[in-house]
Length: 357
Ligand SMILES: Nc1ncnc2c1ncn2[C@@H]1O[C@H](COP(=O)(O)OP(=O)(O)O)[C@@H](O)[C@H]1O
Ligand SMILES: [Mg+2]
Image: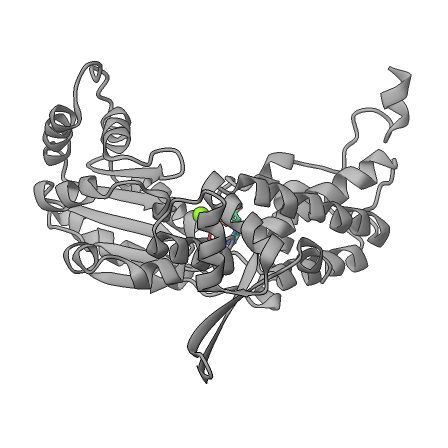
């Protein structure tokens, strides 16, 4: 069709493999995360000799390679041996003990799960796992869990295993029930944010996978690195690379120029807003209350929240506040020694400010 022929002369694309910009894509190499990957591998390695592994708690802010690092280690393990199973579960999708145990059974190839309750399914799961040399479980975004019973079951009834738990929220780790901490967690592993140089290195490597050689103008690339480093989230960078590429193609340009990068950066605002929409209803509700009344003391916000029909306990409310703060939707400022003693002041961060670095 003439219309598309005009655009870059038909089948010529500046993209070599656009899928390489997907958030789920696991690159062949994961630079700057070698130490963390080694740490994870050390926790798992006893399973290779039929000994029990170590449980690990992984935490760090969103978009800095926690999921990718674990998936990378799992892929490596699968290439090495079939006797140690590795199962990755995202707790966004599976948030109750029943759902998780069901999914674990499915992952291990068991299909006759209909009409079985959690206890029966766990019995099957235990058999399946204990036939293996070892099993590594990864529960990602575990702060989304509604129940933790399954963790105790896995920890006590499966002999040769390693449980890896991941969360974006350091505050959540600190507040975690002592019971879970003492019974489940043996080691902690923090992922730190990437420096600007590391961010540039990661994005450069991704360009190699995703784009035809030489299409990136250095100025356009630098603009995107700046933005990504300011947001401290590699996903923002991947999004910007893709959008800038599409913008260039849309303009039939053989090069991705600074102007295309600027259009992508504008679009990033939509990305942030979408992210706001992804918040669970409760969090969204709390955020709305804050947006209407902030800056405000946390206790007063809780009262307003209750007046508007919110029914979470104060502790849950505090946890959601911490989460919103971790995700940079709001700021939390603690003051002590004033006329009113210790207070916590909650303020809003405008979406605009977040994206207009
Ligand atoms: N060191 C790295 N090298 C290459 N890509 C990376 C690296 N760190 C993160 N990424 C990419 O950035 C995106 C976000 O990483 P992810 O592991 O999902 O973050 P987290 O789980 O910490 O929120 C993914 O697409 C991932 O492949
Ligand atoms: Mg993740």
